Image (cartoon, rainbow, N blue to C red; front, side):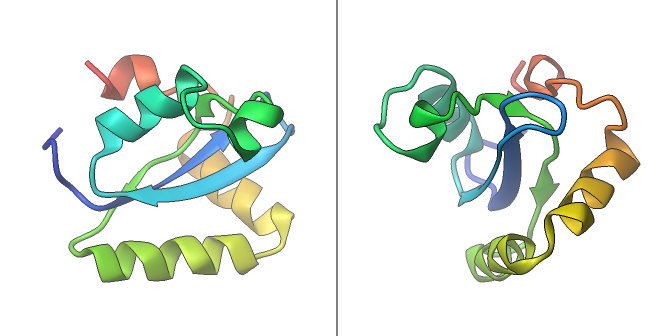
Length: 98
């Protein structure tokens, strides 16, 4: 994975648990911050640390637009999108963050 690549990344507390959608151009650094509770906020308060889906984008603008769209969706739609590629809600960080 490139160090600087715009992406959208939903995190979950557990299967069917609390969801969080974020966007970044430095995925490895940002996921490390979430998993280690470095930054106070939603993911820290709700223990949202499992990477359940990742979508790379060409530009930061398209990544932000996609994140906003996903956040505006009904929860069921977001879950359906994630489960198409990750039906068991595995934490994908072990595969991606190598």
